[in-house]
Every structure is written in structure tokens, then in C-alpha cells.
Length: 168
Image 1 (cartoon, helix red, strand yellow):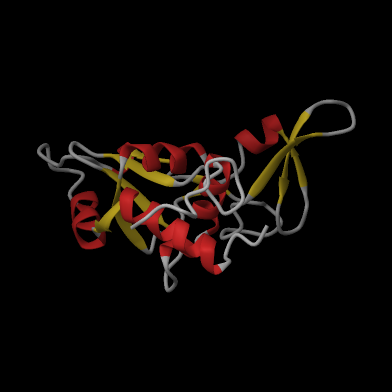
Image 2 (cartoon, helix red, strand yellow; image 1 turned 90 degrees about the horizontal axis):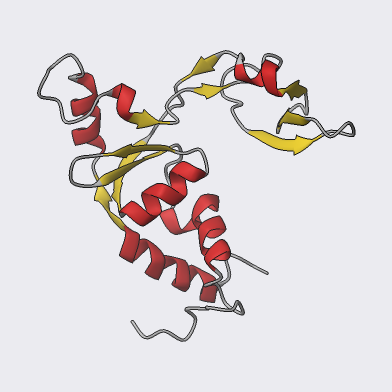
């Protein structure tokens, strides 16, 4: 399936239009910079998945790991870049660092949960959820995570609950 076909881009644009409310980068960064104030609505400690492990061979910037079972049936984490394998204990104690977040977007609670489930930085704010987007320069509908969520929901063209024939 071509997740970025014209039909699927239209579907994903509808999904984004429903679940992404607007860019709030300036406001969120300002609030996070005020974490020492008692009246800050949230602090860096409230950011889910703010600190990510990184591969000791690749260094910071390579925070993508795949969890799988090895031939002994043990859970291991494999670096997407160099394919180094870490045991669960090794993975737990890998060095961490916050990822570079280029944009903060206000999103629905539904999308906020889906993003958090996939390891994305999110904040459950007092009035809205925020997504710390680690990419910039392309339409949100083209982000792989949006395609993943839409495919999982089975709303892409040809899927069980396709939004292809929905009117605007």
C-alpha cells in the first residue's frame, strides 16, 4: 500500500485536521523555561518520553531502537542504525538525553495518547495535549507516525474503515 498516495494524503489531511489544533512552540518552550516557578502549568518533568536512550556506538542522535526477541527468547533492543543489540538491562542503563524538539503542537487527547504510545514526547497539559515534533519542514500528514496511526486505525484507502469516500 502506498501510504502517501494522493487518496491517502487526503485521508491523512482529514485526520490531521481533526486531531492537530495548532503550533504552540513559542508558548510551550516559554513555559518549560519557567519550570522553577510554582505557577508553571507544566515542567520538563511532565514531558513523557523526554529523555531517550541512545546507542553507545552511534552516539546521541540515534535514539531509535527496535524491541524484539533473540534466538534464546530474551527481549533485546536493537539500534536501528548500527544494529547493535542490547539486553533489556543494558538498554535500561544506556545514556539518555532529551531529543531535539523542533515544534510543539497542540493535539487531541486521542492523538496525544497514540503518540505517547509510540515513544514521542508529549505533555498532558491542563487544557490540551502537546506533541513535541522531532521533525520540521514537511507537512504533518507526511510524518511516518501519522501514517502508522492511520494505517493502524484502518482508515487508509482500501482498508476496512477507509475514509476515502468521506465528504469534506
